[in-house]
Length: 251
Image 1 (cartoon, helix red, strand yellow):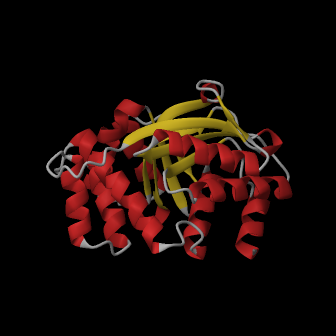
Image 2: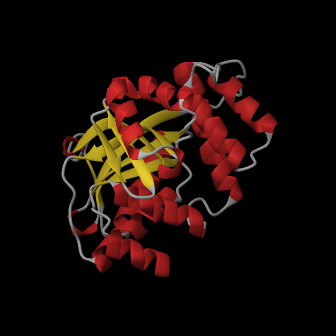
């Protein structure tokens, strides 16, 4: 999975992800709303919300927008818009499998837009469960290795219930059961480690290895899917090799 983390880093540096400011704010607002709905409006006890707010501040999202999103999620500001989370499944080119996490106020629109995006790239939507069995639902954290050396990160992860701690060079990744999310989040917070990514992810049980061109075509498809307003994240089973990462950075 370290390839996935490095790919995300490259996209951030190039500004390829959420290129439009409005798209960034829309995605962040929905994450704040859903986080507050799931765990309450207190960022000291709701780690998912705290992370969403930190991301919003990093993107210079106005304070009023953040507070309004928190109130909406907590049920204190009823504006008539009701969001729901859903995960949709599909197949991309070259045998790739994908799980797409969405937050939407119109399920039919989201499904239609996603079906079109899959079809346009030579893939297709799948029935519920057809792809999901290829993934495990896990807690996931990644942070720059400069924040904590690997030995300390490994010890922290093991003590907090992690399944695995991976040294990715510039990045350290922690994988854990879903129920260990808060324990690990609190441990990282106490250690003053701010994750670049933290949340519940769909981790592939087995990754598919493709050549560079085929890998890039799958990643291009994922970029297109992530541009849809209702899409929060895309999880896939393609191994992103060092050669593919080098090609991305050179592009």
